[in-house]
Image (cartoon, rainbow, N blue to C red; front, side, top):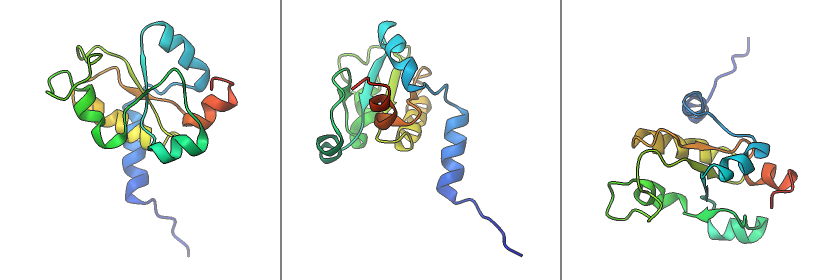
Length: 127
């Protein structure tokens, strides 16, 4: 008898996604039009290899919480309140889910991510 086990990270990812109202790539333009901030958390080497997203602000994953937290001394000027809509983007939509959930943990209740990440945006002709 074979038992299929879910890895711990898969369980963490699934739990994170239950807390998010994730956006499809086709929903990103409307989010930007209403004032959302698209954040590309991919490392520089990955952005160079895959391509840039002109509409995105680059905040690498290792500093995301500090830059988006309106109570942090290291916050960005855009991090004015808990009501900012942060839309996090990674390559394929996995790391971004975990990152957006971390922003929710900081009280940034409008944080979410893009289903399929950069690749989905590219397929939609967004970048």
